[in-house]
Image (cartoon, rainbow, N blue to C red; front, side, top):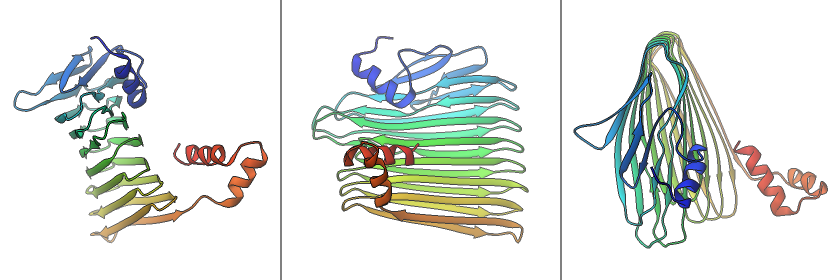
Length: 306
């Protein structure tokens, strides 16, 4: 697979890749997939629609698969359906993400519909980063849909990050957590200019002793707008927590809407949310160490979003 310098920039930004990785991978560039399976991780193209099935064999341990998407053509609208099946007692890491380079005046858009099935006793670490670049007038648009089912005793941690440069995004995530299973979602989001971002998360705690956690940290700058909604539904003996912290700057707008629904007397659900500006004493402290004001702001934001 031949990669240009722009391709490599995007892959490094969204997947920490420097060229084609070892092991199992699927790199989707401008609607075309380039893939390789491994002994324990099979990647199969779907027959009825664009996308792939990623099948991890039961008992697979300490392996990873990279499935980044990159768009480099202005005006391209890309839609993909991916299904992930993590076999019983497996423990794997999946590195995804999408980078868009739009040099033209037409909007470029990627919509990824991902379904995860984490089988009994399996463990998944999922990392997804979104990034946009290019100085054309066309927008960079990303709209992911994520559906997660975690079976008895399974666990998943999902890290979802929007680095910068994405003009519009609507992220919809829904999860179904069964007996003794758990899910942790960590979301980090940065918007600036006139960018708009909406994130909707619903976690259904179905099984006894299931757990769910949503941690969101975001920064809205300039005239950007953000909306964060998180709903925990406790249908059984379960624990859940939503935490949203946001920094607002300039003329930005942020709405944070945590919601709890208990359908069992044994559901223990909590939430907290905070929106505010950078504290003046933080800036002063860093500036006394030799940083100018912009360097101090950048340092605080980098630490906040880490």
